[in-house]
Image 1 (tube, helix red, strand yellow):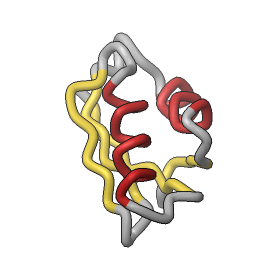
Image 2: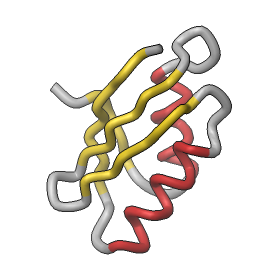
Image 3: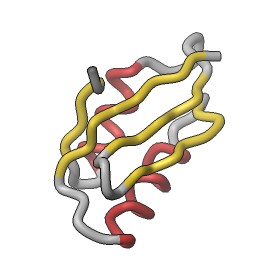
Image 4: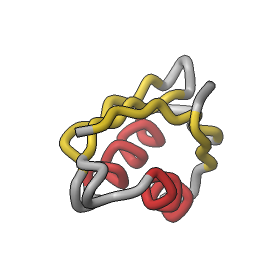
Length: 71
């Protein structure tokens, strides 16, 4: 299992937060996704044998938001 923090741009409200969370949890291999709206971050626990960080970023982009690895 791996854990990553992603910087998410474009979230402005609770609906945005829920949409990003749903997008991440819809990716096969994601165990949990916690979205911090005020800080614009997503913390994701996932199976790094099943899913790549690029796929996580792509899922957020498909939902209409920007994302990159935080740090």
